[in-house]
Length: 180
Image 1 (tube, rainbow, N blue to C red):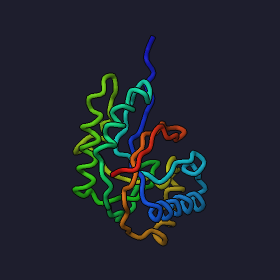
Image 2 (cartoon, one colour; image 1 turned 135 degrees about the vertical axis):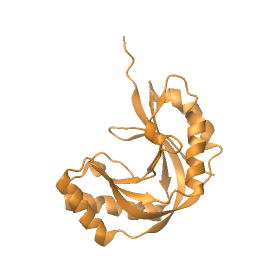
Image 3 (cartoon, rainbow, N blue to C red; image 1 turned 90 degrees about the vertical axis):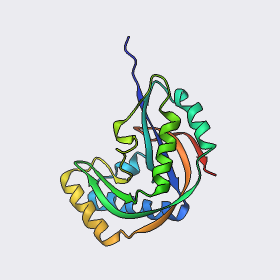
Image 4 (cartoon, helix red, strand yellow; image 1 turned 30 degrees about the vertical axis):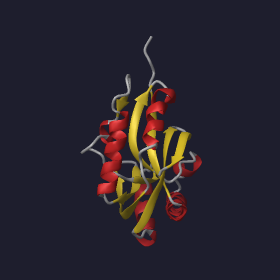
């Protein structure tokens, strides 16, 4: 019998002011584009640091809990918007030393978990940090999202406050911790 792995995400979450602003962008894109995927699937503003295929969350949880003891809060700059064609619209932070180190720490903390696979897009030197604002967008919806953000988006400083392990489709927190 073949084992069926599920996708789990390790993501960071932001201070309340940043969350409010990012949620406003998500809501605006949903309103203008007519695509409410992020809202209907209850996906909070976040930035994924690692995507792991595993049998269950229980396989990842001990490694995740160990990680949360060493990770620290930090400031990032969200400077731009972009598209992962064909379906994703996002806000882009600068890949700072803090973010690069955070990603490396998470990768080092989970890379040794037996019978798991880390997505090739969430490994050192192949990770593109982004905060999804719209997902599963059709071509016309992408154009509307861009139009909406041209008049609403502005660069911002954000504080990374929490780290979480979540199931996907639908989004469901498995564990979430405030970072030191």
